[in-house]
Image (cartoon, rainbow, N blue to C red; front, side, top):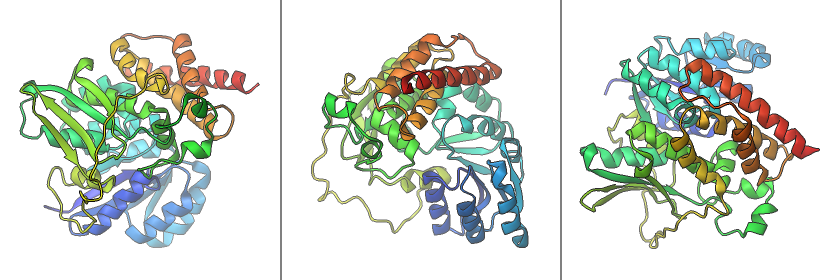
Length: 388
């Protein structure tokens, strides 16, 4: 394997940091040549000093001078702003990009990378949630390839290697159930931010941890799976698996079920994606079956976690429905984290935004941009009304 030059969008986030860990473990195979962060300029500087990329970009333009002054002596090219992030996707200093930014922000640079024929290691599920039709069409017209980093979709990908797509009956996406799996409805109504951020199995960023608590992340994964694996909505289901050892399963028409198991560690799917299915030897602790001698499964409770229903809703409604859901959720989650709304208001904000937002049956990219802006404005008004 020749050394791969890697760009990381969201290098200071959870997935970005773990990707750099993986790159450090295999210096003869991978090199981080582009690092992009949102606002954490000091952490980005530390990463650049350690990994010596060719280019470093901070999205927050107000932090640019700090970045430039710190990295100028090292000869690292610096830039700031969304336009710079989008433009660097066409640079010849990398061949693979890990899209690990949070939310809608991953869409534009990913599309630019696809157009440039880059290899995509996708950790930003919202890219396919928001505009899966646009992204898959772009992939079909490009030399670009896409590998999922989400543990669930990586598991499905692995289970499908060597299999006939026509032999797939359904895929089964596993869910941990989040921090509120055993909470009563009343306890969920009273849940605090601290409660919601206390995930039992996974160490993730705040946004995805809240999405796990509402189970909207599972709705998003259902939508993402449709685009990744070209499936019908009735071929995709979810099941709660509290131990997070079985990362997902595929059921075939002959009744056989294949599953991918592993410890709950995102470095496993990151390694698989960067290696492009080549399994890389690791000294990380393996799965201890004696420790996990009981694996349990249960149906998700749509009454306590109604956000999970948005997955099938969006797939059946089609058009820009998923784009609206994502935009409203980003506004609502931030409001919850800021202490401006209650936990259950996240669902209500999304539901009310869907009722008010314009529906577009066959959106263009420009339509998605406008739909995202409109839904955010509507959701912001709803949040403000809840706050009064």
